[in-house]
Image (tube, rainbow, N blue to C red):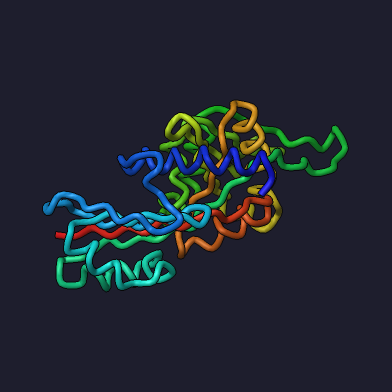
Amino acid sequence: MDATSAHVASILKVAWARSLGIGDRDIAATRTNIVLPHDSNSLTFLSVFGESVFLGPEWAVERAREVPEDELGTERGLLGIAKDRGAHRARAETLLFTPDYLPPPSMHPSEAPLISRDRDMVDRLVRASPPDDVEAADLLDQSQWFTLLAEDMEPVACAAYTEWQGFVANMTALTAPTARRRGYSKTVSLIATNVALDEGLVPQWRAHRTNANAWHLADALGYQKFGTLATVAIS
């Protein structure tokens, strides 16, 4: 890992530690197990840059000690730990980032994409998209939008982000069903990523295990996998 990537890695580790309400050094190469109050309503496993932490009530921490990390980072692994505790809403995400600017596509100036920053265009794209895709992209909860417009001024794809923990830009994207497989998401995601870097933020993509489109898009852009987050709610 070069100096730039190492610096970005330290930023992401601090951001994640603070998001979990733990100390900046509580994510360790040898897994840290943190005991939460007995009435805690969730279990969390986080692995970033080869360092990890597990958070849960004492009974869950004891069970987790016997579970390999690659299994803890899955919905199945956490559900197994809490199967007799009313486990539900299990979720596993792949975490990706880029420390560097992404190279722009080569094109003639006359072919430069027309980008809107207006919320109205985001609303129009959302209304034209399937509910499941809208929920996965979560565009409306972002704060910065980059919507690609077609020649008829209709929105065809949008990439967006919101600042997280003061250091990170959580990236997401959505493409209209009629405009897929044309590289539109890649174009706007590249623009959004580079703007986030201009703002001094670290671009991060959180791809749910079942959201293959998000994973493939981030990978095609050059984002690098750096971790896994798994959570499960308990009664």
